[in-house]
Amino acid sequence: MEVRDAPGALYEVLRFFWKHDVNITRIESRPTPRDETSFNFFVDFNGRRGDPNVDQLLVALKEHTERIYVLDDMEVPWFPRHVSDLDHIADSQCFNDEEYRRRRDVLAQSALRHRHGKALPHIDYSHAEVETWGHVWDKRFWDKAIMRDLSKQIGYSRGRIPQQEDVSAFLQDRTGFSLRPVAGLLSSRDFLNALAFRVFFCTQYIRHHSMPLYTPEPDICHELLGHAPMFADPEFADFSQCVQEFGLASLGASDEEITRLARVYWFSVEFGLCRQQGELKAYGAGLLSSFGELEPEYLPWEPAVAAKTEFPITCYQLRYFVADSLADAKHKMRYYCQTLAKPFHARYNPISQSIWVDRAVATQSRE
Image (cartoon, rainbow, N blue to C red; front, side, top):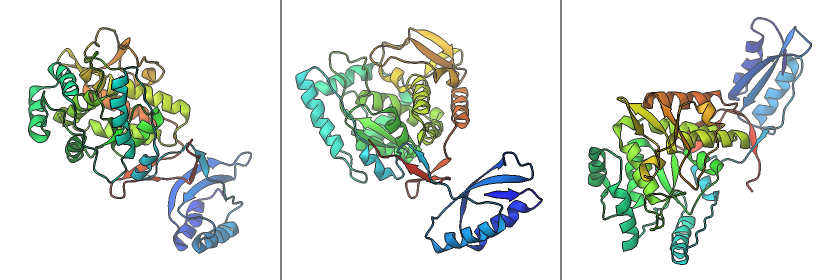
């Protein structure tokens, strides 16, 4: 709407929103092109045409502004608005070992049948799968005190793969994050979108026994020996907030922004390093669950640089970004999210498990 520039002019217009009981969610102002005597105000609010309160408001605004236009909703890529919308996220996977593929397919179907609000699938892991877990367990990097805590609380041990349901309940109590089973690799958009709801999509299959110390894709070792202990470590306690901010920043983002966010996430949450007492310390889950890494080029941690850096997913990493400290890593990650050009501001409501946005948006169909 166009309003004549004068002291109190905006107040005179906004009072009609109060009068007609219409809640404002966002206001943006810009000088009117080629007219120095007026301003354009873009106002988002709750409600639509056809609502008596909104219709009466529009009539009043037409009488008290220079011009008024009702714009179409901003169109953005599909994103989940409620945690149950994560049911729509699909995935796929493949592998050459026929027996391994059959086992993966059984676990994949179990994950695909899962729906929000239901108990997570219970998996009976085979002796061979537990042996592979044991090989990774022997190489774990985490402090013994943390592993003792996980052993006491959830039953972590070399000879037993914990159930995802138990780990999810533990993490939700500690951080507000929960796990959700997934059949295989997701798109960056789908995975990041879920983080906005404090949900980690988590595989339940285990890496191939021929390569127990490295996997090119996430598996149960990556999730439960990489990510889970990180959140159990008091030193990393507020790191989960950074992770959720990545998710919120991804909602409705362009494909280009998703690519940049995914790269920053990869070089931090998955393969991040920081300095601690003069030594390098891994905080990325990929480094904490795969043990042929850590022999490449090291670069200073700058999210804007990481966002432009491609990475391999089928072999060891060629370069890592090193933060001055864990606090430095978190600060720069948060700052990067704040600098992104976002189509709207999003906020997660943990009570309703839904996303609130401050603009009227129309999501594109999910392909």
